[in-house]
Image 1 (spheres, rainbow, N blue to C red):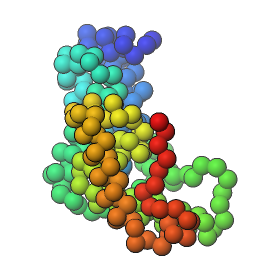
Image 2 (cartoon, helix red, strand yellow):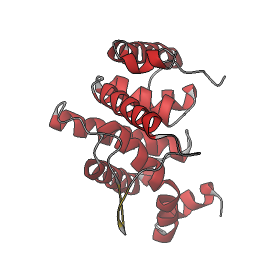
Image 3 (cartoon, rainbow, N blue to C red):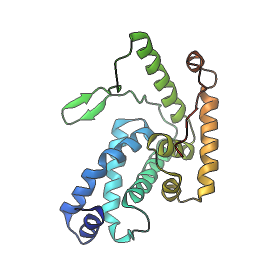
Image 4 (cartoon, one colour):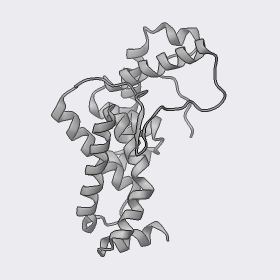
Length: 203
């Protein structure tokens, strides 16, 4: 069943239809929340809050944007609310094990296994980038996560953040510059011959 039909059924009170939408998007909403908040428990709470708010607000979803964009907007607000409540808080590593129904599961690196020295360096880089993202102001953190991690388009980000397209581009530029400055002193990147914060745009 296509998504528009599921949304229509959910709006009419069909709980199984909404459950199907949750099953489709819960992974993506959790991942975004985790990268915004840096903590598995907080990310689960934010994701749960996102779907509860979405369910209670279905009558206000008019289809002006995609359902996924609407969900990202709710999740973004849930994460920002949580960040405001706790302040900057503790910085958590994105290498923290994932919580699953069968217990904790270590995150796996894709591809062939590197040698131990490279693996340690990769882990150190991920830790440094995670800490640097966590140290950004919440709105800069949000746009980095949405664009460079979740890979939303500029147009989708504009809808999620409820700002003009030009604001997305300027804010992303400033956020990447701030992230780059946070990482600029690290020798890790110089060893690899790349500048921190560099990323090739995909159109």
